[in-house]
Length: 290
Length: 280
Image (cartoon, rainbow over all chains, first blue to last red; front, side):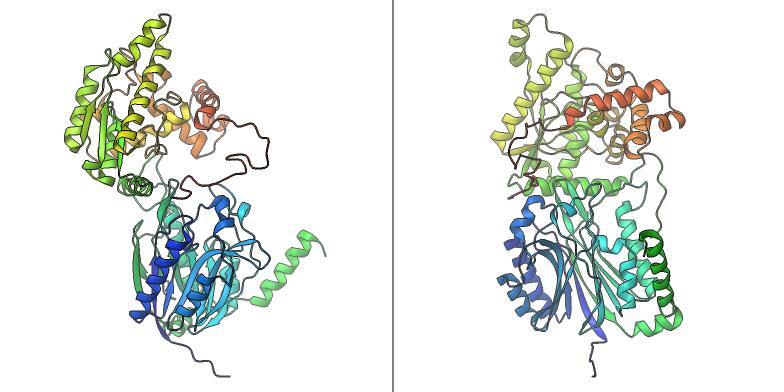
């Protein structure tokens, strides 16, 4: 089978400020941005985590979940005829539990669904109280080649990008709702610095593109930082969006950079995959028994 | 853009970025309620002056109302400094003297001590601010800082009452840095902090330690999660650290909503949990 992929793509980062719990408004806003992006010849538009609902939902989670057969999802599917869409939302699963999910729409259909596996429930976070954990880490094939999706905290567990890249992902998407916190003397807030470090590290270590889309806005006193960015497979920052402000940027992703990066630094090729499995099994037996 | 994690000096802040966050916070949280303005009490002190300056950055001077509420024994400098701030910020202001409002209460209760009198004045100022809030459709902006909150150094339902507070996660030391960055008048930054509830009162005399001491110890106990023992080992007097820890514990109730006796399966704020922004 011959698979055709687009070697060059225009990705639009939609650094938006969703309104908390207002699914109707957020959906209309996203729909409008999808239409504009399609008109501009953009190939893929990426929205943040929970773009349709906002973040600090608490008990509202049960009121704003959408099923895959919801009219809004059908509409997004329809809109994806000419433009691919990656977007975060509260998903009401077939099991009637709620998931912090990312839906990927392509060629007029809901093509892939990823559920957040790591639900932060510590410090200021309380996601595990309301959401059900996803339990799959799997790359998928798109018109842009194999890609992986992580939702915020998922990217703080380095086993996830490792698995996704071993599974063939050449573009890692990270959609997030990162709150501003950790004051520094002169530089960015620590939360912003940490995300920049994570994005560059994964791009560099796995010679892949990292497309990070974070939200802005303020909910119950918590501000979200924005600072979305695209990092190329050499670890080079191709685009950075502003701190705290709503913004969009359209970035050309050229997959021709991948072979150059991977011949220069074939770290991913040299990963000892079977050896890693062997060691993980050994540790599993040591920790949990046979 | 730096990807290195910088090592932070104690309590040092990047004022430019903090101002961006705080003005964005005020603007977003005010506008989403449908209110367009804020009202705040101006004492002539650094906290209320800085809060007003941040509100002006967020909403523009036309949408910030400063209210001065002197009592007959208030230091005249307080009013003069508050007027200096309103002039330099270009905001509307009102002087609503509370003497005639609280004096009848004092006269009916001649045994009342200075702390009770101070509490009554603080609560009367709250009543005045919330009345201006209703009249002007302006949210009440709180001005307490993190040091005051942690030490419980406020009057419950008095000066602590507000709709939103931009300074509540900044220690007094950081408030001073931010005030300097925003070029507040030097005399306001430099003067001794005082609630001005009685003649000659200063915060530091009443607390028994300086804000610099309190902030340094609180940062260790709260932000750095050190135990009392570890804080003492790092060079602070045991009496001071123990006292501050005790005050923080004893005033925990001031940082909470009232306790509700649980009976049903859906008790407010315990298992009926919604953000404050619910429905906005």
